[in-house]
Length: 437
Picture 1 (tube, rainbow, N blue to C red):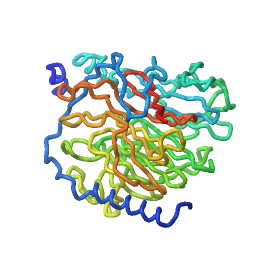
Picture 2: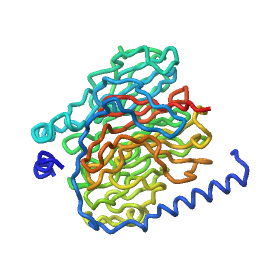
Picture 3: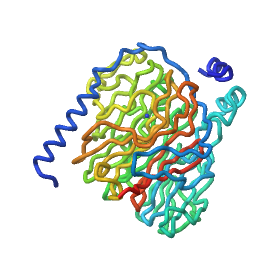
Picture 4: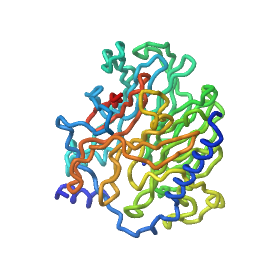
């Protein structure tokens, strides 16, 4: 690690299958959950907590690597921190360009490691860009600024003549006509969301149920383990539920430190999310996870993790901590798992259908880099049916020197069945297509 990094560290200390196939799927899922059981976790502080930022060196003509039979290409570039994506009903792609806003971190980071070394050292573009592939040839011919002057935009949604965008401090909606390339009408904030001074996890993702009768908003905690007090965590570390007009707000599920990607398992009404867990307990704690979301469920934060593992830093645990749910899939510690897309098309081989793709932005709190890739979790009958496996790699170029080419964030499936991934430090959208027949 360079002197500049070391000095910085001193300064600024992720019904209809046969009965036999259903049984096999349940058995496979149960076997998988057993292999990732929470009782295998190490004790807190078994290893020293490390601050270890990656050094982004860019792609320099290289490409991410996908399994045999797949082709990776540059779908579009030239963005400013492309974080999240949304495919409109008419097939347009919307890209939210946004970033963390921490003036103190920007000043110190620019001084000691250089503003080009990390995406966290740039201001937020606060806009949404529209891409349209009019010829369906994998090359977007139309590129327009769809909406600007936002406040750290992230989740997006089109529903019943409205375009919704979740800024860090509130949910807005704008009149929308299918096919329009720019928002021209004045919008309205329909829901305030917690932001303010302590806003460590600023992204706000957004999804609707199949009927369009309810919206779900993922809001991360304002801190690591509620060190600024639980009063600051009101309506945070939650998935919130509202009506499309912003009314009838309630907490759908809680104790989720930083839920980001959300999706409905194919053929079900079960909501799933990926969650970034807490830091500073050691290299292998606490694993990020991928889990189904139970209505009214409590998942432990900040009091416990992975069931009944107590966080020694958090005192006075309430009764509800004893009912904390155990997540479904362990995604390993400090991987910063963010993006989630269930594969609901047929262009990819059979093994990928119904499964989940998860983008891991990568670690900063681990002595050896972890994450920096896209995983695939196979599903059958709405449940995980096997272990998570690497799908898109090549983001780490030199593990020993902490050099990475990029950092994946968001994942979407296009109407043609290809996969798109945002890389928010190379400002690129990567497309993955299956070409072997």
